[in-house]
Image 1 (cartoon, rainbow, N blue to C red):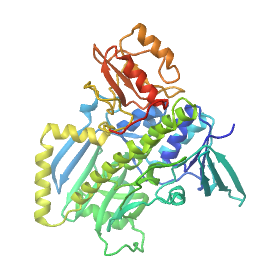
Image 2 (cartoon, rainbow, N blue to C red):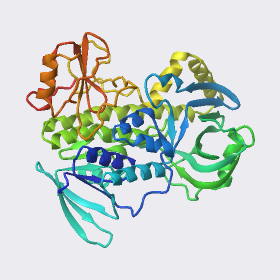
Image 3 (cartoon, rainbow, N blue to C red):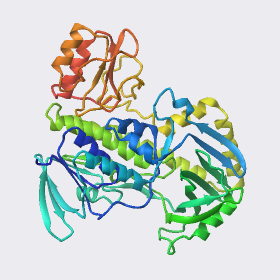
Image 4 (cartoon, rainbow, N blue to C red):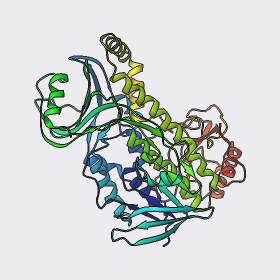
Length: 499
């Protein structure tokens, strides 16, 4: 079967994209220039919202089995705890009230094995060298390991090929932003003399920040800043276990010892983003479109959610039940999310690397006051888990009818129901009281709607929820015209308009 979509890059974002499109019966090919999966841990955490979205394909349980749950984040200044928040309050909102610590290498293994189970294999040692996109499709040149070049015609292309994206480069898109001239050490090691608790520890020391993430039994991820760089030249020598131990001795109380390093490296933070994720029939997702500070562990999750956002839209267009203009909403929705992540993680980085006794005292005192407030702790948990992500200004939102959840918000998830968007077709779900007119509506839009309406969130109202679990429309019960008007827009009979 001729592939409709070429996915370039088989990291977590490309694999997520491949799984989503394949389960929606869109023929794909996914290629990667590397000969095998990375064995590095790199991105470490999968947050609640990502697990919710991945559950629709049935892969979340496998990831959880391979990972380690953390349910709290603790902040200390030297030896004093100044703030702590847990994810316990999220239990009424999500099946996943925790952060899942899992090395990126394991994430990729689980996702690739799941994709293989769907009948699709990653084609490795294949490099995209060039492509030409037109109104009708994309013609790509792929170089195989033996030097052979292949010409491939597809309807669409998605670049999930990382921060040094070939697709982005060939599209000529600017990667706007900066590299922060602060050197960091990153390590995956085994630690001794450390209390084992299911929480992330962040230490603010006068010399810098130290963050410790539990990964597996006695295995931890450590990140610490180790000084300001004078220019953009790279460090010459790789860090050693002794370098890491020196940081631990100064910033971690209790005589913890590091041993058996799995990975130790220097890095500098890049904060960059393209303006538009779409260029005709080519798209960018994940690090190809945006890179962030690792503060908060949002980068990989943002990319995987890019994939979940684009896949259902592209599947509807490929099936011919939605117009091409639906795809413009991908960048309109996801670009502001990445922009917000850049702002939040950038501010967090500046805060934790602040220098000077007075500045650090004010920072620590302010943080202690803020995290002493229950609303602040709840807010932090919602932001960290990414359950607060929404699209309030999406062009896909129906006119505001003053019903909660509002258009663009994540729809509530009820424990006794399957997740919206599960299955082999990307379908919307109507949450409304059963009525003769509702049955007519379900039959009329059988290609777009789940076959049966679900119980509304409250009597007298109805909601239309997108295949990715975000609210599209909220209205009074019986306003069937609002639903039919919405699907007329989806089919291109009327235009989508940005808020």
